[in-house]
Length: 120
Image (tube, rainbow, N blue to C red; front, side):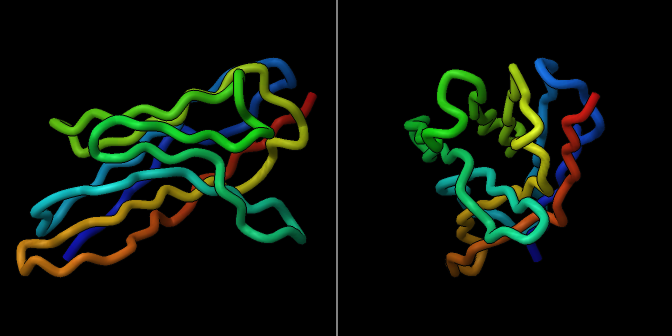
């Protein structure tokens, strides 16, 4: 069984910063791509950023230059550093990972979501 647990969300003023973390645990053989998605009220879930096992990153145009995704393979953890936050960044942020378990089965896993609210 594999789990993803997020932390680091909260309330922040426009222009502020937050750092999200997501730890993968359980019967893991290998973690492939990890990433962050978000879903604002009344909108579809959208990609924020991804990072491959080799460290290659991809960021949505809407967050380029403000958000940075990174990972620590030794800790099975992915981070999202969010700077210069705007009200439009308000959403529930979900961690995602493609993980091969010890049975050599690969699946897509999601965290429970963490709320980020940008407001004065």
